[in-house]
Image (cartoon, rainbow, N blue to C red; front, side):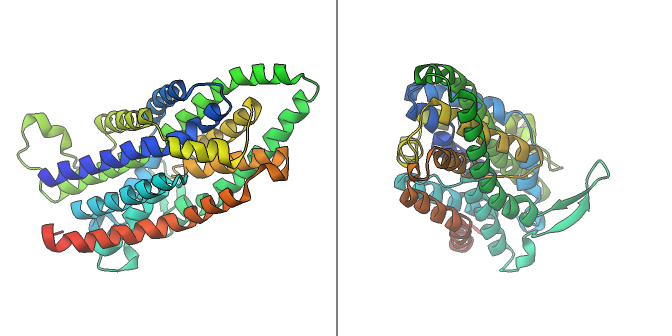
Length: 359
């Protein structure tokens, strides 16, 4: 019982860090274009994060039950996964790198599950075909749900940002600059809210899946027998995303977003590309649409990848030299290392903690 509460607390810590680590993804553009003050932008992001987090559960089910064999998952597995993700997020936040909290969580879960299964790689659901509850054949596992979207979503962001920016240039090329800034300054309020909603919709679901997995694992192991009435909601005989999980994850992410992520905001909003409201509108609309589509397909894509590559696409549409290639290269290397690094960290945490607290 205590161990489960400790695991849930660790998940909430990760979610809180995700809130301020990835808050920049939703509000960097609206801050850098000076449409909103940082405080107002963070408030907007927190509110829409909350709404987005309550809007679905397809991604939560993928993360909680679609990536690793739950037969090998224990409380220690989940705790080690959280520690790996938390350490990586704090390190990259300190360095000001907009890496993916989603991939940090997934890498941590895979690494910890691998340790829990004594190094047997079959614990990771790489690729499998199955029939869903509606009788439809679906392709599931790490390859179709994480790896392929990890490659495709940045490409979609880059191309989408480039194409939408060029379309907007065509539509407004006869407008006076002051009119363009005024109109898109107002429209960017919509796109920033849309982006913040997409962040909540995409990212909060991932920790929902982890908490659902934790309660299901504890119930299956017989560790939640004779619970006091106050805590009876923790007993979960089937893998389900209960309302209390959705609400708590949404509130914790919103609180983390309220704390802000100013280091990463400076990287995305000022160092990568210099933007005006029209550029911010194009980047946010592109990235949020990617998150909406992927979330409905149960794909835990990275909010960071979507918005950063959308910003890059917008920058290239302005002119190639508008993009800071040195900053872009640092970001891409951080992306490449996220899943292996968090996997190794979580594997190490499991091995370190197992002799102390058991499995």
